[in-house]
Image (cartoon, rainbow over all chains, first blue to last red; front, side):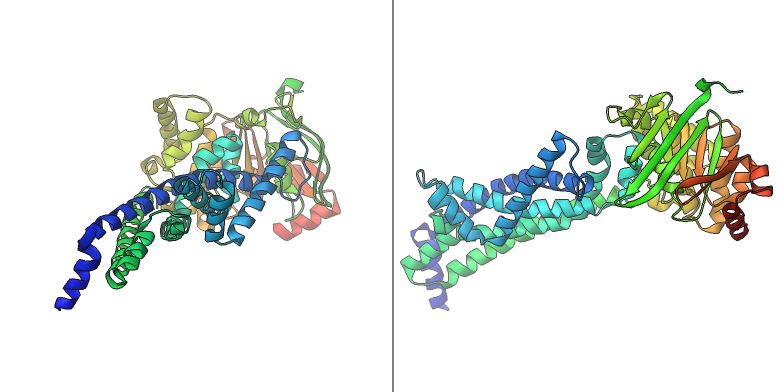
Length: 239
Length: 247
């Protein structure tokens, strides 16, 4: 028993190691939070492009300059999604840090951007699927009242789509949060990096790893709790 | 004789292709103010496509449609403004499930016609009263029966004060016992002088309130006329054949 207390003391209490873990948690949360915001904005924009293209232009010839532009942007968005989903997150992060940000080596910025761009691709596919899952009749009913494409999206399609995709979106952000654990590869002192640091100094892995695992779990449980709450609230406004 | 001013919709040589298949092969007709045009035909005949071309939910491939004197097939026309004046009722109701009945009905008037919320709600309540659904104003569409949904869909279209109502098989998705309540609303509207174009299989409705019945087959108008003459004395063999199957 004493041995366990000693292990705990040596790897958590001594040298303020627990402070390091909290700092690491802070960095992890900052990366996940800002990456999620980038992911939402980017994913939403890409989803709008792709679903608009899918609904109005797929398999048709372009008849105006605007439609040609839309087709080109759609192709770019498709390429973006293919590349991001087809390569490992860690490789993307290292490309961002060692190649794109080679001159500045701003790890935090590179990580936020890289995780955000990665998340955006997944969010885009989730939101696009949500929009396409709404019955075509909803679109037609709105257009027949005289609403244009944009108002139809805002008032009719997106509110319904958002509710449908909320569980999948929540899942994506949980994955994003956990995936930030590779940020240590580009010298960011995130939670996992800090645990590693403590292990390398104390040669004892038990408590650092168990504690950070519990910390990740706790955050995920909190996220799940608030997601469920949001889902329930949206369901109450509907039947 | 009616003058040209009474013509609400003029369709001139309308063609519609889906890929390589020609669904409408040159349809020309007129809908005058107060007309109740009933469009019948076998499934796949193009009658729904014709109706959906009238407010350009389907883009016509060729020909012209004039609504209140404006060529709405002209790409420069702002179709959204004209659609406000052409209500549409769908087979599948297409109520907005995330909104109450009242919100379904006031969305268009408030956002598009810039009415005040109060004014729009008063008008919506009056319309709901007329179709016997005032007590369901705060219900969500999923809490309504099929017949109730379709009655709400009709008054939602009416809330925009349209000049014409387009009905795309409004009773085809209903349980038999609910067809009557929807037809009753439509008959009342017809008698009150609402201009209507109705795609339907309800021959009784066509005979009772239709001012003209149009038979579309294989993308062309084969025969049309006043209901009595149309049903009692059909001329073309294809119409005779069709009527013998449905009546």
